[in-house]
Length: 238
Ligand SMILES: [Fe+2]
Image 1 (tube, protein in one colour):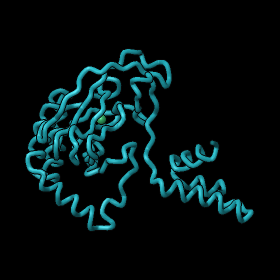
Image 2 (spheres, protein in one colour):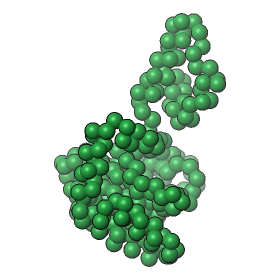
Image 3 (cartoon, rainbow, N blue to C red):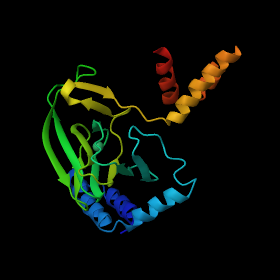
Image 4 (cartoon, rainbow, N blue to C red):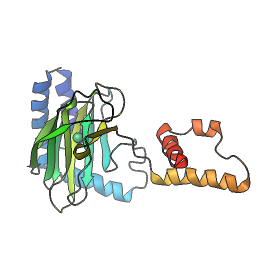
């Protein structure tokens, strides 16, 4: 099975409106089929390396190792790939939707957490680790939305690792959260802005000062992505 076939079959599965446990079960079976033959992803990566405009319109994400492979026309699901460096793990996080994850190249690690507090205290979270296991290439798992699916994933070994994730429609507006369990901290995850753009904005502000003019006018700032402006302003306020 290749990516296109997978997405067609996953869309057909969703069209049957199965209950979530059945969807996650059948979805995992489909993902395992896709993971059996990773040749399509090798073609994808080759295109990524040689075509300057391939993936040029990727949306920004809270994860800088994320590539969006597909979004269904009715926005009912997205397909993402994650490229992991040796033993690299992402921050502990929650999700706004159900998800199905799987290891495509080399084993991936997943550490699951349970939330002990009621979530009422902003920026605080009391998490307890409940499992730490490895998905071998071809194996899949699931995540649930909000506090039921808090986990951390990444590369289990010193090998370049690739995982895939299929995620449903968000049931909550806004960003997911990142957690620091040892410090009992929680924070809204921010989309990663190309650091080049932040640097360019800082340079523009400084250049304006040097020239005695205001380069960053309110109308210019209003036209820019909000997360870029926020990152720039936080830097300026330090
Ligand atoms: Fe996740």
